[in-house]
Image 1 (cartoon, rainbow, N blue to C red):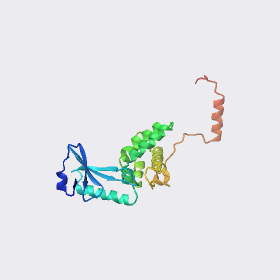
Image 2 (image 1 turned 135 degrees about the vertical axis):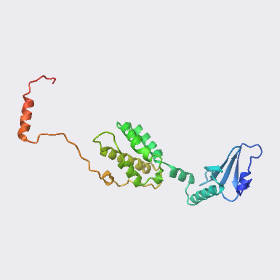
Image 3 (image 1 turned 30 degrees about the vertical axis):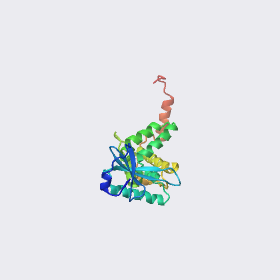
Image 4 (image 1 turned 180 degrees about the horizontal axis):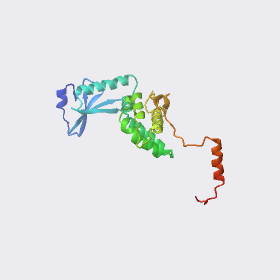
Length: 234
């Protein structure tokens, strides 16, 4: 049994009291409908290098039209022609920053770092709310720069400079993790080769405590301390 038109697809029903059944698209190789009592789902089925049959779910009909499913099937076939497993390719290109950050953070937890809670806090408070849902393939340098530079801290006198610097380090390490672990083939981080100073041009003023510059007054101060005879607990 097969179908070639949308009207034929609409009229498909299970045969021989089966609970589910694969029906092939007669005009598009590797494209099937997985037919169940209450649903029809487009499935791309294929073999690569003599492997067992693999499947990729394209989506449910009619939310996904026949034309859309055929287009997606043709994209997968083009990948197969290049020797690329479309399932791996699809998984790679759907990964979000949150997906990678979770894996990276799990590795940090295993290392039992003393600053683990600080790292987790910066991720949850300053990074993931801004870029967590962005796919890695869509995460460009401008979005990363914005994530770093828009840090705002509560409290007077807090310019966020050090927090921005630590956020830059976290972002750089997470994106580097993709390459180290081979999660996405041929991936290059948008932050590769950059330093924090390349992104943040803020002038950070360090506040020092007041000190005695005059040598004479310094000697008087030290002498006064040395000669102090007050309560030892004061």
